[in-house]
Length: 353
Image 1: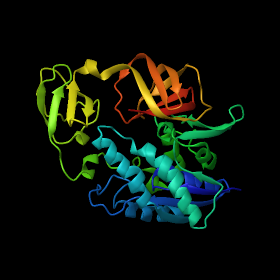
Image 2 (image 1 turned 180 degrees about the vertical axis):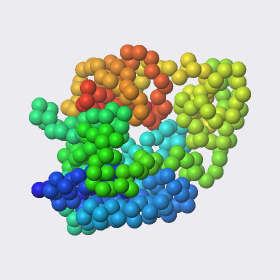
Image 3 (image 1 turned 60 degrees about the vertical axis):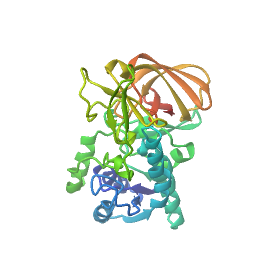
């Protein structure tokens, strides 16, 4: 029997995970991280950062009691502000498109929360969540390997690629081989009827990132080819590379956001052809497997919902990798991550700058 802490969000995945592990004979307790620091700019609902967290805690208490496990909530809002909120604000100001979930997983959920649990005097052998991904120890690599979820549509390994070996050694993902519908069916079998019918968990900021900024900052929207000023914008943080809708520009052909220049506060737009690339460079590399020195071929995901594109991956140095796509793919926003896979195995990933 193992002692397992389960990260709970009152959703079907984490609640079913807690019940499954309890049914398997483990000593289980539930935990939730409190992220909101009282900032009234946060969305009221649909976000894991906001006053809605109080309702989440109450629901988690209810589900924990139903399962028959202890439950605790830990305030990590100060670190969340420094590691995630400030990172998001600084990134948008620089014309980057950050991925807060990737940062939160590495710095908060699987680090700050671990520290908070241990400082409270609680101990655990493993920490489990409802992520659709897998972890195994590879004897040949002598490392813990991060695996794609068996259901590739719900696979969440993209958000976990920056985890360290120390973190991976402490984590388990019991939902690894399950589909979302199988999870819901299991919840129904466990008589967790309310949670079985819930929609998927919330976004970090409900997509309303502009609420983090107190003032707008007007600038030009410029055609990347002709250098013609086509309109005005109210702050580059309102836009992301690849965006088509909401530009407020009448033009002879559809326009897309191609790049954001923070130094001149300019939004550059272009036609569909400008959104296609065949190469990208990533930095701040994190290797899950042992670092590879030579060029290799891998499936590369440029965003979480991307099915992936095959590419030749060329390590340049410890901090840089060039990725040459074998077929054209959509433009990647600076600040986003590219993650490389060999079949089900997550190899490495890095950030586009």
